[in-house]
Amino acid sequence: MTLAIRTAGPADRETCIGLVDQLNAFEATLVDDRLTTREAAEAAYAAALDRVARTKGRMLLAEEDGIAVGLLVFVIDEEHPYVREDVRRYGMVADLIVVEDARGRGVGRALLAEAERLTREAGLVRLSIGALAANEGACAAYLKAGFSDYLRIFVKSLD
Image (cartoon, rainbow, N blue to C red; front, side, top):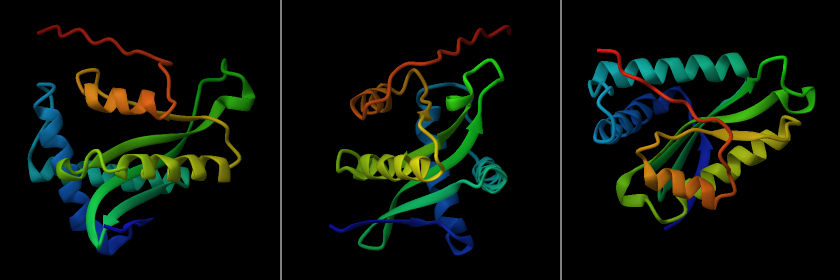
């Protein structure tokens, strides 16, 4: 199979929403706060498009023989003023989705390599990505790809 990565455009809306919907369904098996409706996927896609536009980021589609198998939302973010200026602005993978039957074939690695390229192209030296703590497969893949723990967010339910 031939893997190609390209910038997603308006014609890819339904494909991207379908991929976001798959991510929501998968994450709903890991945590109890995910919405799995079509409306939730549409809203997440719209928010991602807005964020990409505001930060001069990119939405990337990975395709194998013309079939969408992955989606990456790349944005440029900025840390608080107490972070050193040389690393304050950074590339961020806001979302990374690989369809279940394509996992383990290098789709995620290829998308991350493109995010690294976009980060360097923007003149930045840091790339970040987050994952649900319960998503052990993603956490392991990111560690294997050279990422390391930087911030942990703790949540306490008060209901």
